[in-house]
Amino acid sequence: MTPYLIVGAGLLLLIAGSETVLRGGVGLAGALRLSPLLIGLLVVSAGTSAPELVVSLNAAVKGAPDIAVGNVIGSNIVNILLILGLGALIRPLPAPPKVVWRDGLAMLLASGALLVIARMGFLSSQCGWVLIAGFVLYVVVAFITDWRRTTGDSVAAARASELMRSELRLGVSLFLLIFGLAALYVGARFVVNGGIVLARDFHIPESVIGLTVIAVGTSLPELVTTIVASVRRQSGLAIGNLIGSNIFNILLVLGATATIHPIAIALDFARLDVWVMAGAALLLIPLMATGWRVTRPQGFLLVLLYVCYMAYLAWREGLLILPPM
Image (cartoon, rainbow, N blue to C red; front, side, top):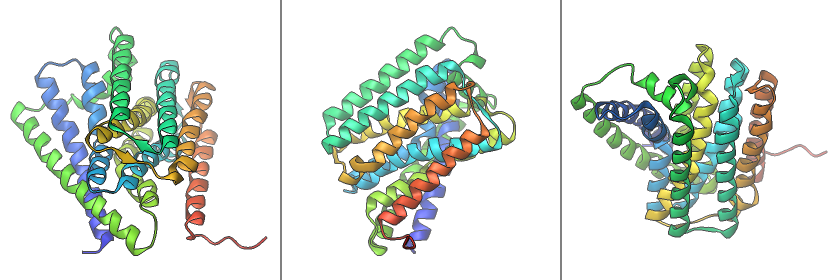
């Protein structure tokens, strides 16, 4: 089985597992009579970012820290520059002030924390617990500021209510949850093992594989959700979903990974990639605050920046030869 097929099969399992875990988790939480707000903040966020979580955990345990960290940094760059940009190109995306200031600033703070950790060169278990504590604080603040709002005014509650429309029996929800977790586990093993082989065969650093192939693959659920919502004129939740995913990726995915298996952070990440991630988060806030939406021209700018970033990575690794001036 070629590494392409291994990675491809793994990504398909991750996508299927993510959706199945999401459906099963929401069904189970609904059966336990949890509020849509709590389900949105905890279950939906976890289900959406499940591919990044299982891949980073698996990569860290297998001794591939560059894939673990590159997956998170790359996924966050993909979410903001590529996915949000493509969604805005299809249709301008609303950005409510609460999403801009509360969630946008939380994403910026989380990005800044990862930037500091990257400069240190090591993500220790202590840092992992600090990141998890940051996620808990974000959930508490989001719950306090949203609990009196109507479902339509809360991104988290609206996301959960949308999924809770199709009620599932408790037994079906448990089956979906277990099946999805198994698919995520097997898919993560395939993706990490295939990524390591690809890096070795093509003499490309594992960090680049994590930033590109694996990051785009684990972000496919967000890509599909955003594109479909834009096409169906249901894009009101798109920005909140993507920002929430970025917060979850840094604070909980990397936090949980570090508490289980502390990881070194490659110098290349600290030199450029984490700065690109933080820069994208910083750029997004004024873009959203201008008219409280992301317009088509702004979407084009975001996609163009992602293309430039990919071109630079290809040039840096000798895969792109520029003509002499």
